[in-house]
Structures are given as C-alpha cells and as structure tokens.
Image (cartoon, rainbow, N blue to C red; front, side):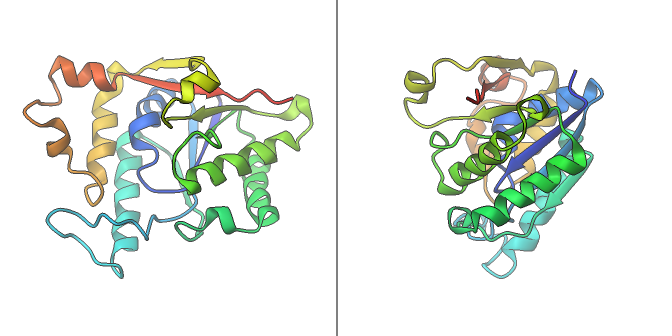
Length: 218
C-alpha cells in the first residue's frame, strides 16, 4: 500500500477522468494524497453553458471547483502552485524542477502520478510530466519514488505498449462522478451521459477502470 501519493498536474480537472477513482480507492486504503495543481486553468475557453464566468472571474471559480473535486475524491492536501495556465512549457526548468523537488523532499511520496511527457496531448500536460521525470531522474536510484503516468494521445499504446497498471474503481464511481461534476464550468456531465444515468451499466463500464504506465528510468 502507498503511504503518500503526490499528484502533479497542471490544471483543475486533470484529476477527474483518469485518476479520481484510483485516488479515492487509495485514500480508502489509508494513503495520504497531496495534489499539486500547477495552475488554475484560467485560460480555458470553456466558461460554462449557460455562461458561469468571464475571463476575470474564471480563476476563482476554477479554484472552488478544484476544492469541490478534491472533497469528492477525499484528497487531504491540495496545493495551488500559482503558475500561469498555458505557460508551463516556457517556465524556467530549474525553477519548475526545484518546485517539484521541494514537494518530494517534504512529502517523501512512495508514488507520484503525473502525465506521460509526449503522450498527453496538451503542452502543459507534457511539460508537467517532463519536469516530474527530470526531477525524479536526478535523484539517487534507491530514493526514487515510483512514477505512474497518464497517457491518452492517439496511438500512444502502439509506442508505449499496454498500460501496466490497471485499477478497478467500480466501487469508487460515486467519488469519480462527483469529481467530474465539480468542474461544471468545463464539463456538462448531463450532456456526456446523454440518455443514460450514472447507474447504467454502460456508463459504469466506461469509467470503471483507470490505467497508468509506470515510467522506467535508465
């Protein structure tokens, strides 16, 4: 069992679809979770349908949505790291790596969850994952936490192979769906469900497994 899990993603809502069930499950099993969210996603195009925010008010709304998502999952520690949305790839690497190194030294996680650099579609996703990988790679081999990565770019399995960590989260779908619903400025959950409900087997089967690739360092 993991003693402390560090999640490093760039945006509020990055946790919802791919990791929220896993995190809820690990917390239920006794793990502590720290979620380091690098930005507030303040440059997002979506602002709700009907409109819930504008460019000025969106950051505060997304902060509230992140807190609600974390409560649904059960995350005990949310860190808003204060970087600017859509700029992670341009941040000073020493600063970014130092930020992550400080978190690792403080928390001593046995597992880090982040995006697989190069296979997670958004430049912020890739840059965040790359910073985590650089930082962990710089540590002595015996002190490195395990790094599990989320990947979802088209054809990623052809290059990376099948994910080696599959987590059955069917008992934690209430947490997962709550996390998704929390980000209402970004997702219309009812539209995603269409004519189905959260209790329909088709919906459950779509969401009940989360997958990760363990990053193998040289």
